[in-house]
Amino acid sequence: MTQAPLCLLPEVALALSEGRPVVALESTIITHGMPFPQNRDMALTVEQDIRDAGAIPATIAVMGGQIHIGLSPEQLDKLAKTPDARKLSRADMAACLISGDTGATTVAATMIGARLAGIDVFATGGIGGVHRGAETSFDISADLQELAQTAVTVVAAGAKAILDIPKTLEVLETLGVPVIAFGQSEMPAFWARSSGLMAPLRFDSAAEIAAAHVMRARLGLSGGQLVANPIPLADEIPLPQILPMIEQALTEAEAQGIAAKSVTPFLLDRIFALTEGRSLTANIALVRANARLGAEIAKEIAKAR
Ligand code: PSU
Ligand code: MN
Image (cartoon, rainbow, N blue to C red; front, side, top):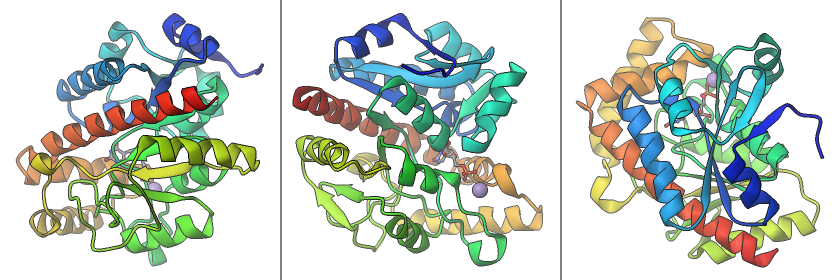
């Protein structure tokens, strides 16, 4: 089917060949998004959440010259202890594959892997977007372009307020990416359920999101859908509480000249410290919620096909 160097975990290969629901997961959140051992525990828990919901998880990473679609618990453990893994976006995939190095896939690279393997749905925490100050730094994540060209439905908790959320929504609109808030009209803001901005689209069921995914394929439209799933109420950190910490982390990043790929990991790490770990607890809760919703969407797509 493809010339790509893919290595599918047997259980993932079997599920895909039988048309059963599979949910892709990224690995940059493991290596660059959370500290050890919470990163490993999160990865294992989220995989179990997907199984409990009746789908098969497939965490994606590059190792030994292959794109691995699905990792064993041992591989997940090893990756979680590899903080110097390369952070891979679209631009880095080929170079990492020919080097044999270990690479963790961002949202963009995970979408590419999922598409190659024939996986329709991918669950994560937050996507990259337009950074604050992008008018001078030009820092706009390649995740947005990927959403415009690769046909995977991505479930995230919205864009976090380290980003410029209004500009992120504008760019997604320009790129023709459907942004769907789940179960509310407002765009969620990662740690917070409210951003103060209306989402362009709203659906209240996994079945509708799945139907729209299938309809886009029938229309021959390139690109994916972004589903913005609000963090569970019990785990949210409202915007007024988290904003001062975000401002401080941004000031520190600027003072230290943090740039390019290092920006997002730096900010997440600083906000973790400044919130005394509360941002991490919230992050884990929202990834789990997204995994569960991703499984429901994958099941509906499997039914529809
Ligand atoms: N947001 C999070 N945690 C993460 C990331 C984003 O809450 O780990 C990661 C994702 O892999 C995303 C990447 O694709 O950061 C975006 O990086 P950049 O801003 O450099 O494009
Ligand atoms: Mn960037």
